[in-house]
Length: 425
Image 1: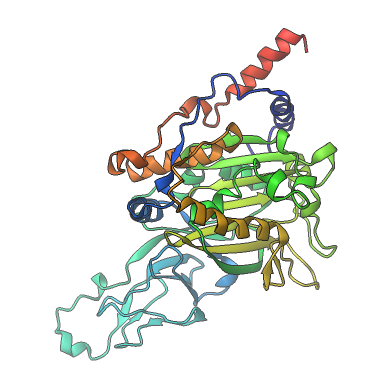
Image 2 (image 1 turned 60 degrees about the vertical axis):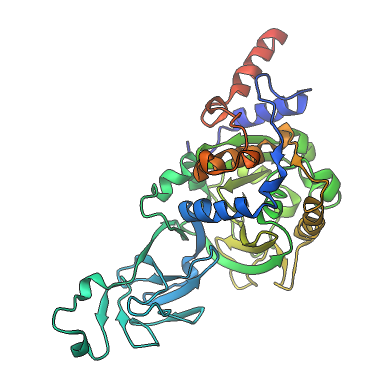
């Protein structure tokens, strides 16, 4: 597909602005059970299935720019070392020596010719092969080096971005992204550079923090002076993709050419292949389970949400850009890494209040509107990944959004054509 069908998107914006009810045939969304945010059983199921089977964004090639460079990555609760191999590949391994289970590396980042465990000196190549051990004679002549390498973690790249998956039988990253991978071509992920990466800890469930970035229903209330002036929430177009992914596209009010919050500093370069929608609208993707990012002709700035506990979140902000010359590296989300931007402050500070409320006796469930349906779509897929039969009945969501609403299907297109035919448009 490549660049989006501009006319179709624009027509859908006007359809959304003119409707007086959810689209004909769109299902009523049952309440999400409140326990999905507070019940330890569901948190444990997420850990066992979602974080173990999904493709997870881990980092950028700029963090390990040369052969021999490595970085530790533990955001998903597993110790992983990611290394730039001599042949240019990027490999990931459990940071666990095959001898006594000690970590192979203990520094957050570094560069080595071999990955050598500090405990007893076992050494591994950047491909994970065991090549040397201390006092080999003590292990006998039949000791087999070939079966004592580091245990691999699935690792693939999309452009300059590094992703991992703990399931050795998982589909490829490109299959996981599906049609989104084609839509992302115009943003040149292979040319984006890492400008900023910052980490913050939040006192709320990770889904509470993430969901504030996957719907526009809250914009007028929480962001009246920041987001609302640059985003027309009534013309927002949501799209559901396979594998729980979603997309929203919303124009600026009054047809302004570029959303004000995405205007860069003068020295920031431009991604010249981005089409009209990416240049004039907020075009944001949610990649299951925890990636949210608007994309524009200047920035690729993902937000990542990682569980630290049932009511604790590790929040990561990134800014990728094509170039910034001799000027300072751009940062879309923070004030010099010292505090979050006002938009993110508005979301994250209110998340703490939400957490207190959902832990109350009065919180039973979440009734979602049509505008918030991407959240429901995410939860439907989460249950499929976990295995519906593994979830206590009171914590399940009903599978009411059918395939007829999943891309490339979109009943709204036929509804628009029907409406135009009746009105003579």
